Image 1: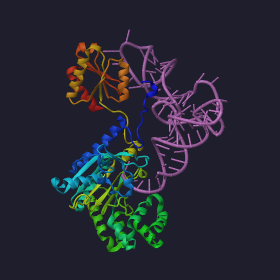
Image 2 (image 1 turned 90 degrees about the vertical axis):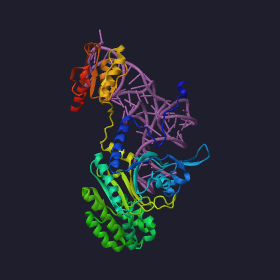
Image 3 (image 1 turned 180 degrees about the vertical axis):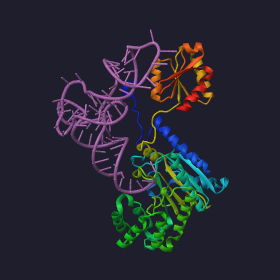
Image 4 (image 1 turned 45 degrees about the vertical axis):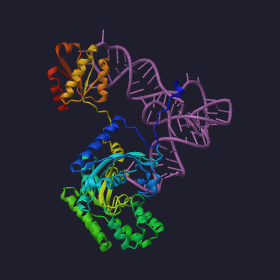
Length: 442
RNA sequence: GUGGCCGUAGCUCAGUCCGGUUAGAGCACCUGGUUGUGGUCCAGGAAGUCGCGGGUUCAAAUCCCGUCGGUCACCCCA
């Protein structure tokens, strides 16, 4: 093939390659989330990337239909790539809930696809980590959902973060009290923009789009922007919204009490009545999570309670509560905050190769160390020692082991600590123990 | 989907407005100085279809159109 026929290597808009550094960061993030979820008893599941289009269509409104990657497969079936993990869960639950039993809590980590325009931290293929607790209306599940969010972000060491809590019923109560009940969706969409465009423009939008009077709009904004600690906020809501908000307020209070009892610092949880969420299907508690150091990137974990997940696919009623960690958005945030080490960090030990005809023996030494639980990389060819050490340096190996003819004859090995440049010589029988000791110390 | 800005070596960028000798720099990379010891230093080297395609011109990285990719805003959302 001539040079002119080389195909330009490229990836689709919004689709990305993951180099080792980014992949390690993602693995670490997912491992952390997984271990928290397991500690709460969430079970792992997976579903196909591709579903019949009818399963996915019309579930998130017109917008998500437009964002579907949809096509006809080779068998003439109308299929589409999943755009979230919630709709597949609904289908999954309708199909299998009888064998699983309720209540059922599962987590699901996998890629989803949306054919929308890209932006920083927003891609067309991205990873979600969803966890849901279905088949129970108990507020304990709402509380545990918030606890999982809290424990995960605490374990991730992302600096301070705030879980913003609301309850759709509080909003609904306020709206009906103010006579805006029939405009719920429009109103919520405007209210959701509060932090972005400010109260003046939200008021304008409410008047223009939702047909609210200026007074109604002002009262609403006042109600959703009450400040103070959580108790004060709830008290003021009751004052403004009256009985209409009583249930929602009580639910929020129950969740807050549960979180406090579990030892969650109050500074990390904030009732925020302006959190409405884009999706319409939430009916109770709503969660959004922001990194205090990087609020602009948006919510890195969102979710809420829904009355009925799977009514489209089964007659069995399945209420539930769950949330979704935006893995890629979180990774973008962590990278921006300098909290992920993108450098290579593979096996801590590099075994250099020196004497050309001893390859089998090098392989033997490497494997003996691995059997002792040590991660070892064997340099694949007897290149100049300097080059091998340079490689060890660049790849971040902690120790380099050097065994040349002299060492083979003496039955010893030289261990070099890369950070200090110091080295020591030990017998082969002591090699694993000494490496372990040195790694423990560094 | 709509609009603004951007796209030059692996990376960060200069050069583009006012077209004109072999398109530059820093970092990274490779080789040697050091035939068994990395990070520093010195010397040398390799590396660019100027995103891609078309047009204008004697001449295009530079001007025009289209397209792909990135980014920001709207929208929506993780």
